[in-house]
Length: 280
Image (cartoon, one colour):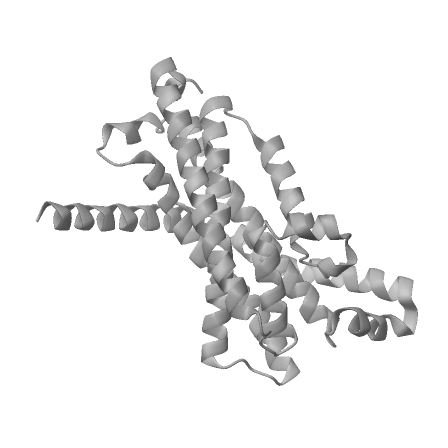
């Protein structure tokens, strides 16, 4: 019975986080629209650069190097994944910083909730929103191609994207710990986002890099998701090692989340002892 009550209590906490998050998001419709159209804007810029440098043979060269006939679909796909990854990484730290700035951060510690778990919940609504935006970005281009994905393929693509975002939540918890300790950590967040973007291969195949870089990129979860989604969506094929990559994503999710959880709890305990929780 106590376990059932605890489970029901956690569901109420999750519901409250979803309600608060979506109420806040509803105030920034313009920002959501910008996030939705930005992959198209970035894709258009890169297409223009490609045609300016490659001329009439640009599309042919792109297909030879990537195996994808539609470069715009490839670019939009990478852009949608890149924005989802960047937003998830900064989401937890920015949520804590906003609570600090408006003076409500320590009020959470008056509740019996596990704070690391509470901040972890804040990534769920944003993760689902970014998965929905990914589908909204890709669906029109896939439809124009005349190759609509089956419901199972859409489910697989959405599941792979969401699974690839879970390890980034672990990174977000580490950055959240830094936010509790150092308050302003945007320089660190931007550096982490840059490294992950570079090693994920959102806009280019990782095979272009030296072997050592590719081995480091193998530790970045979004690199595997990018390859899988490019195969499923852009190349309309399922690679033979798909299940191995999905299993690796699951392992990375557990590892990153565990590391993020342990880091945040350690910094939180230190902040309790030193009074950092109340310093903004």
